[in-house]
Image 1 (tube, rainbow, N blue to C red):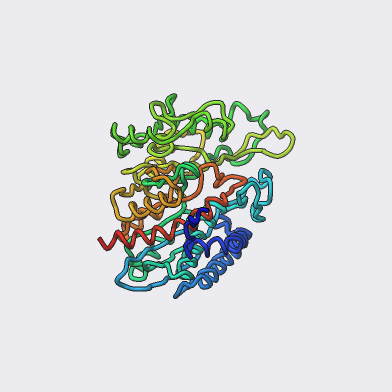
Image 2: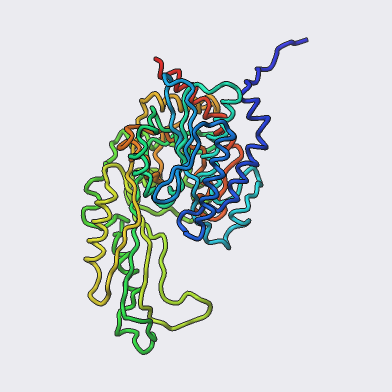
Length: 465
């Protein structure tokens, strides 16, 4: 009779498994708090979320936990210094979330989390409460099982979804407190649950709002139509002129600083597992659309974009109203790639938008917020540690990828703190972040909690060599 024993379960894994229901319940509790930073009516909820997170960090075992005030929402800070001679990992995340609109498209209320089909449905479940909270629970698990191998600092902000406008000043004022060796972030995605990946680049962001004004009041479209400029028509024409037939952005100087991909880079990106038919099926589209001469993977990770995020004006209520509106407005964002500057792009956009406006209307352009694009090294100790950790838990070596989204603060981390970041995310592109029915897989949540301690382990070991 065979006496072969099954592999022993480590105390850390056993602790995670034993407490998995509590870990989930705690996350659901946080997801019920509508911490929408973009809307001032949610201010009490954003502050409530900060207090709740502070309590969770204290319960997990962090020291010196406090809410550090900024000109906006506070930063939740905590640390555990086990030995000053050991490396220090600074964990960054955010506790604010996107607005849930349009509410009517949610299959369940955005702030009443529901677990179904192995996924947590709620605003912020993936971006970023679920991914941020993985770090708190991984930290707790390491402490409870004596597996914490280096020092940890937490810096969780409440304004990422509105551009992290106050975090730069916070970094400058707290450089000593934030001293560390690397920044660990989980606010990105993997290619698939069976194809792990690590983002090594992020696009920057330049977010604008434009307003076109015609007559001093709404007019009767029969009495004045054809004789007075319609701001909605004008705005649509202006926006349409900002791209040519090849979907190339027409703003003069827009591409001047764009870092061009080498043949080798394009060849490497082409190896990324990607099925165009599955992509179209998931989005329920007949065909893809984008800048001519580039693949979908290149378009979403390595090329700049210009997109209208919202447009309004005139009458949008039920029934008909024959009105020639006084104003029309739009929100427009541009994703930027390495070497582009959000400040310069905002200036180029403003100058061009004003230059193409006819004399029949008045123009107002407002810059909301921006962030710089980043590339992170793949030959660093931190990247190698993250890669080894994911390879162990997924059973496959992760693929380096470039993310299409933006985390504006990453570039500032390097500029102000002198620290590189590791973008070890566990979400999926199909998690509907920023959209109705956002969700985060239970597999991904627990996989993150299991993988993060291995990053600490390998980062500490490799740093000694």
